[in-house]
Length: 510
Ligand SMILES: NC(=O)C1=CN([C@@H]2O[C@H](COP(=O)(O)OP(=O)(O)OC[C@H]3O[C@@H](n4cnc5c(N)ncnc54)[C@H](OP(=O)(O)O)[C@@H]3O)[C@@H](O)[C@H]2O)[C@@H](O)CC1
Ligand SMILES: [K+]
Image (cartoon, rainbow, N blue to C red):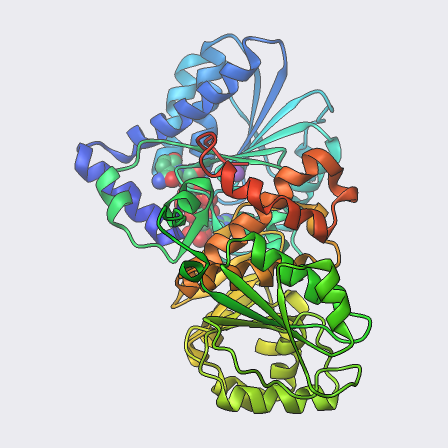
């Protein structure tokens, strides 16, 4: 699903008005009307006190349209205009005129804290104070209103975007309405998926307000949401006349004393995501552990006998190499890693300690083959690209890094974002149970396994991130969040593949 930018949403608006030859107010009527339908279908006339807080722009105008429809259908509605500016938009004024025609209870105008109404926990709050037009911190008294809404614990439906949240920046130290549900128009907003802003949202749903299809189909967006539909299109079906050679040979360089579990997990995950052959490269000490825990995997070891990998030399020709899980950053391993990068021409997936070694010696980044996949968690990412002021800058810096080194960055987080060639692929699968040791090692194995089978590295990164999260989503039905372990994620990888074709994705997502 495309994630449009602020400018693209305004352009879609204009394109719709032109294509349908309608004034902009019709679109507001339509958006507000659909939002009303959404509320009406759920309330079915129940006598809930609805409090609608409207700003003075078009988001506020939407609120007034919703209010009018609710009044016309007999609901108990109190409408407030949050007068943060005198610059009322034209369509806001149109919506106000229409509302005034339908009710003698005109909206109350709020100008300061003294004007705030009480909000009871059983009220339904509809937040239409700011939409995507917010571009700076709201006035202090307006932020106090956001706080009042948040502290009321009333069910809060935010229209388009929670007020106080900007679509394209993080406004520091600013209060944001905590939405029970965000009913967002046409396209989810990137801010919903970034940790600093996404934390304000429990749930979001997309409301199709019928923006111009031609525009939506042709517009190229920087960001895309990756759900089941997108993942299905990336899947490569297995061929009947195939053999293990068809699905490639993966090599995983992983493990050290006390961290052999990382090697076991990544190798198992690599096998379970469909690689034809998997070879583990590890320390000599790791040999019995690997051979007994995964008999399907071949093992090549360092000829030294120490606790860490001191040399990376093998005489096989793998199609892809995954490197990093549990390696440690011992001096001898660093040297081996550097020597390996100098001669290596095979596609790479780099994780964990491989990333840490790259961060400590950035000159090594120039040795990476084109389209290497790097899978940093937030701390590893920071070591690679430097500190960022906020999540939007993080993405910009990740983008610049990926362009500089021609690599694919898989920025792991609650919503993992794959960054490549100026595009962001935002993953929707996964859950908080995955915050457990070893789940990153599993991802490395999955991505390596997919590249081995012939998925191009970008597709492997996007599709693999989805499958990894999806396996965990299926697994928690059996384990709960707390009981989920990385090993269980591996066991459910097969289910995640099967699930791609079970049921169509329910829209809207999440
Ligand atoms: N295609 C669609 O999706 C459709 C979208 N529609 C709806 O339109 C909404 C966008 O409306 P909008 O552009 O009028 O902006 P909105 O958020 O109401 O803000 C109003 C104004 O406030 C101002 N302002 C900004 N920050 C401020 C601050 N801190 N303190 C004080 N003022 C501040 C800023 O003006 P400025 O002062 O910068 O000139 C801004 O213009 C969108 O979210 C959706 O609900 C539908 O109606 C139809 C189809
Ligand atoms: K809003």
